[in-house]
Length: 282
Length: 222
Image (cartoon, rainbow over all chains, first blue to last red; front, side, top):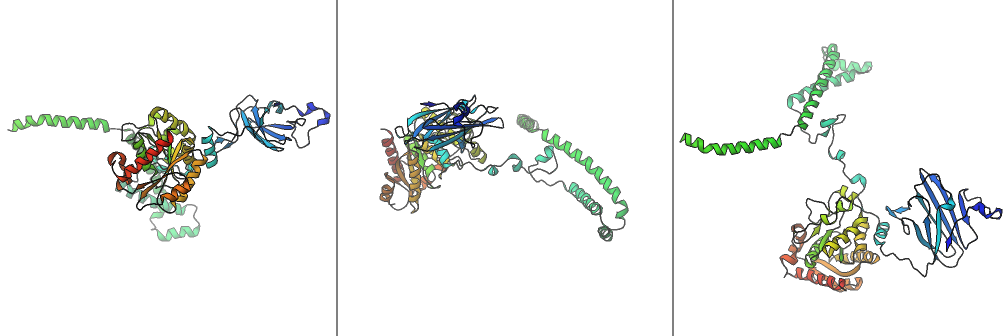
């Protein structure tokens, strides 16, 4: 038996839909099995809501088939379509003198008319043909037990695996070890850093903060603090540019294969020439 | 035949018994412990790649690299996350149709990664340790297997030093219990990838594995 939902206004004035049913809903009240279908548009999808009501004193197996021009996007548990759903619709059990509500999404736009959204078939008594789960064991296991995948936060990402130098781009930011800079470079950077710190303490300083600098530092520092800062800035910029270029060249250079080949050739040459050398010496 | 080697708890010897049974039954062992694999692996695609759709199941099977044909599993968290356990059924059946009998080394626990192999398998073996609490774990594993239609062929009480209460296991679980006595060679089966049924077939442990294999053969060749 197939039930086709009819537009509510086609049933005439005697069968006005109740106020709670949205205007795009259709219903059938004349059959022992009633069907309410509602469609609504949401972000390029059509959401279809189907409510089945039965006055029959026996559980029924029902088939709800999608008639929209698009695939069925069923509700999912653990990424697996909920029980009863397949690519074309839903098959399930409508309890005796009870109701069943289902819903799905379909990627069609424009909220098609509810009366054309689904067709409902009654497949007979649910007690005569009990639900078979053959072949659905894997889906059932995943739905019922839940997936055991590690949480996404536990999965290391390439960014987290190699700490980067903040504010830097390019090969410098891909530093994988903490090799300290050579001692002269380190000493120069430390001296520059102390001068910058002093300048920072004088930046927007209040009178009392400036007085602390005045008391702690030698008088000769103050007249030249602006000059040294400008010189340090220029030196840092120039050095950073050069370091970046050198790092790029170091990262691009790959002498390994050729060097290995040269070493092998040199070793072979050495082996060949040795007897001759020995002959000469002897 | 697809046989799941399961057991509620980790460390009871599921992987060991899977390799031993794989050698005894000349079956392909699939390491289905997606999160914490422990069977030997190596270069080449593994089960993570298969379940992420990056490799064919058959190209992930290692042949001729040890005493047992093996489909290993990757060990990275990223691989475990990318692997979709829903594809395990298809992968196991592909290996079965190409190579014959399959032994699935199941993960511990009660999540889908432990359940799906049982849903696919024709039968299962539950491995338990001879500790007092092991019976409860074995019951839980048996219940999961029953729920997912994997018939329980045998219970293996592994690493037994004294005579374990086989009768209690058999009564509670409703399947014959086999005791595999503690043997240092068995303890090294996984790390050395050398099953005792091949290297020391006359030992008590190897004979016990042989009796489990015979029970599996009887139960699955109806």
